[in-house]
Length: 491
Ligand code: NAD
Image (spheres, rainbow, N blue to C red):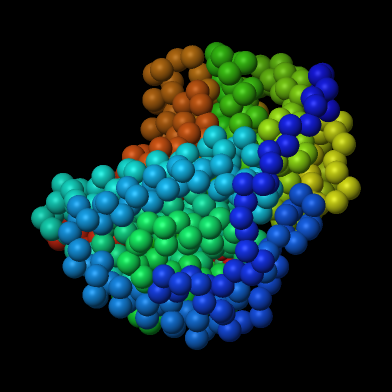
């Protein structure tokens, strides 16, 4: 619902040049998979987009073998400056095909086109540009002289930022001299397959990047393959835990980027209008399918009513609907399974006694939709304050003192991100120092930069992506100890 009526402004899909069937990208070519193919659909309409190959264990073998050959014969022997040239080329091709990639991402994932166009795809290019610059400077990464690549990296990514997560994984791995087998999520394989075409355009040597599609079984076979040297996983804590168990003792280097339940803390001296925008961005960006989403709002008690009332007014202007419409603020939920989970946890919130509110909004009949929702009267013991909902649902709690805010913010099994809203710099620094979260934003939220490390504590995983730290995950360090961002480290 909105105060103004907006004429539809749909982004054209004419720019897409999709295939009806996509194979697996192994050894620089599309090949058929041996599993049963599956359909990728638009979550906004439930319409079929393309048929996708399903990699079985023999396909995983072939992809890992191609990556090993490429590692031994070309990539590990190539100079850093030559590797960098390929990465720069990929970055430029992503920019050239940015509109096509943005449309494909919104179609397959359900996220608003203004996000895929202005956030996801520009960041994908930025990630490749950034790590292209590192490829010939690894001696200066703080890992000792001539740090060595690891070999073949097995990478498994989720569906919330499909191409961006691919860039976070592939760019540092390649810059460091590793080759890759990557598996996109089963509900969002499309942009990874268009990216495979970009790799062909870039003339990347065959086998340096292999892209295999499939579901959990494929991911399981990949991370447990005996000829991979490094596993990088982004996804749920449950699967991350299983991977940590199965790779233990195998000698594989492991990084895990898992879930979160971030506190967004608003003090009574905060610039309230900015804070409202930050709260909205923190939880409704990408339908709340964001591991670092500000899904727990901690608001100082004396401004609770004002914040809630202003938040409701702002939420009433959000436009929910067609992801390809340039006016859309909140798009479709990525899958029926995710929608079911959001519904279930929201119902639990009501059963536990919290008060639920959503603006009046008309949701389309077909597709997967969930109206932006807030819960007030939430206490720390409620499941909606503890479990990751991974949808457009905000739980609002109150606090009286900074010490109480810190205690409540840290009262979670996760530790990925947090936000602080205050006019007072010393308070921001003092609180940030005591928050056990990998990333803390001050008077802003959900800002990402390739030079800035990202990752969590506790059940949010270990290892960092981005920046110099992101390189450390793909290199053997010689006589270098990681800075204090290792698993479970206390800030
Ligand atoms: P998921 O763990 O079910 O799936 C993630 C990926 O793992 C998919 O590609 C899936 O096919 C694959 N997979 C599933 N079972 C597997 C197995 N046994 N072995 C290997 N691979 C397997 O998670 P999801 O529902 O797709 O993603 C949402 C979760 O990801 C949320 O919890 C979210 O917080 C987290 N996430 C974290 C980050 C981060 O950077 N920390 C970023 C995005 C998403």
